[in-house]
Length: 507
Ligand code: AMP
Ligand code: MG
Image (cartoon, rainbow, N blue to C red; front, side, top):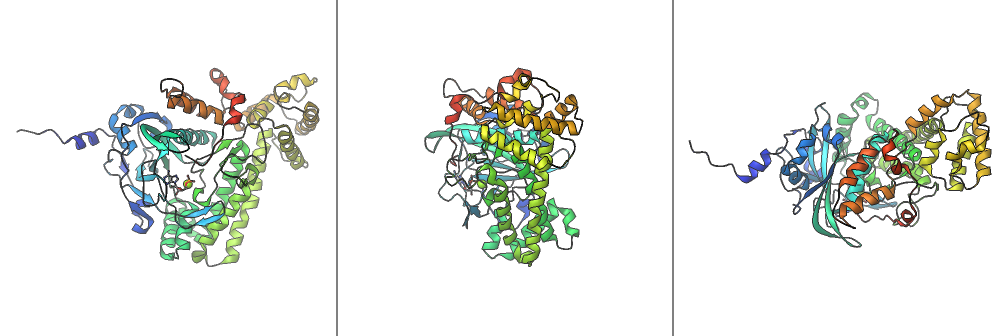
């Protein structure tokens, strides 16, 4: 028999690793999204991928050598079984309700089932215009895509709930921001991308049937235990408040500033989501604002907890047609404060290496934060180096690794005396305490300047394009708590030029 060659499209599709699909969000009614395909991106190339994220959906390193996979992740080749869509949502941006947002540049391909049976919805961010693009071009630049990619995987390695990132695909296609930059698509993965703003959209549109469908979907899929609660919608709100509280406590503990905590950037699963002008604090300033577009400092580091609580009120309001009880809603939201305070207190005890809780600890913790703030001491280095302190050191010179981070040495010495006295009260053993502290105080975080170096090399600012630094940085950040002597420079203070780095909403 005379077989003709398969059509080129089918042949390219056959090259794609087969995925098993289980479309969760895409099974909701049409009012929740618009079905559409990604817009192709010319001549895409692989910039980076995360082997750990790939494994979650059963992809292996050799798969990333296949041109068809790069084409699919660029949005140029339909993945058999995918059902691409853009989701609708709204939200409060900088405190103001904006009635229509949505996936303006992200396309959800659907849910991919991992080898362990877990379902990962996955999204191409930067893959063209959608009905929710408003004035935007539907694209993302390489710079912000690399930042989102690295930080997603770094946060996960730190043990902080987050959306994951599979890959960054680049293209020379020009994108116009303050300057002309090149386009990229970052593949994001999460059990769900539903946001507080997803609920707000149906609430403010008074589409209460769909509001209920969304809440039922979220409860059934992600919080099945709440179905047995006397009031499942209130239980959902309370559980989201608790998760969010614990998430923000983790952000505060590692010195992470999100930068744009609008309600459309708040995950219903309590994940860190929508990485934009985020930053890890270097020299500690409690009022640090990482987003230069945030002129009022609404999303400053020390305001993140209260902003999260405010955002939860927006969610609580959106759920009122389902909960039908203002007082009970307020009670469900009230759990935030205690949950946050307790979670942060636990983290700070652990960061200080304290194994017990004693009277006076609150004051010591407060003094620690004030000392760091007054000296603009490096947040990450302080905690990491503090582990080296010996309780019975006789000479302040022995404290040099951590002491040298402070301009006011006398203030440090006074604080260290109080800290040592506290350690003695629980008979703290140096080596044991150091081991515990090094498990909670990371040595390596994604400082802005590290991301910037990787971005400049990937863009080829000063020579040929080189993606090696993105991969190296990813590898370092995969093990943030380990000593990695070969990567010692990645744990250093930022160089002087880093002070001039400015991050805005433009991405
Ligand atoms: P963000 O502040 O990045 O979370 O985005 C807020 C809203 O603007 C979301 O609805 C995004 O999808 C949309 N958006 C941001 N950038 C673009 C863009 N370049 N093109 C289209 N929509 C965008
Ligand atoms: Mg967003």
